[in-house]
Image 1 (cartoon, one colour):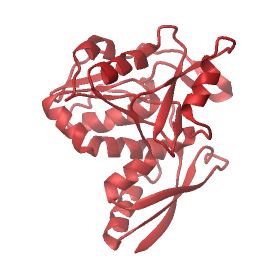
Image 2: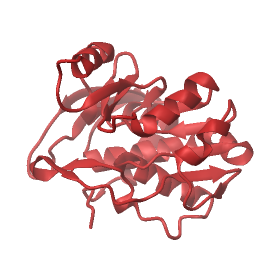
Image 3: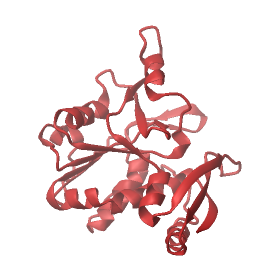
Image 4: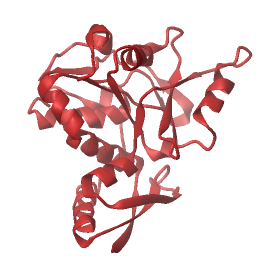
Length: 250
């Protein structure tokens, strides 16, 4: 066995998650036989780039404005740029379509990719901020996931890990006397950098530290162990992430 340690910035983590999602057998199958919905969000912007590139339809997609609402510097909430989600039906991008256009006809062969704002790494559970009184996109995703067994995957970076059970936090945020954002416990499974590393390389990986300054804020330290082949694959993956620039909206 061989082991290595490495550091990932939040942006590099998003790119890694995207590469893992794009390579998932279930996603590849859904691209061929069903519908893949990539709901607008900053992590999903990287996912959409990777998925669209894999089917040679990346022209015209702009990751920098692929979100509905986002917290940026100085606690400012960036406005909704009005962009659509990415909906692919049998590998064809239906430009202009959103999850609301297709949610009611999604089924077991389809996949929804929806970002999250909180993740419990121990259980794989995740939750989504709710600012819209009607529930926003997660309401449509949850209805498809629960009502029609559509697979819901939640790409989310380890920077969004929480230390208490998701349902406990949801209860606090959603109480009648609470104020501010609500928190929706998503019925799908979280997919983090840890999952991407395991999938792409086969190596076992653990998060063992985090933090930094001067551009390293929010980053995380990982340790991975595996065979020479697995570590070699991981090192190749990591080399492709080196120099990933911070996320910007310009």
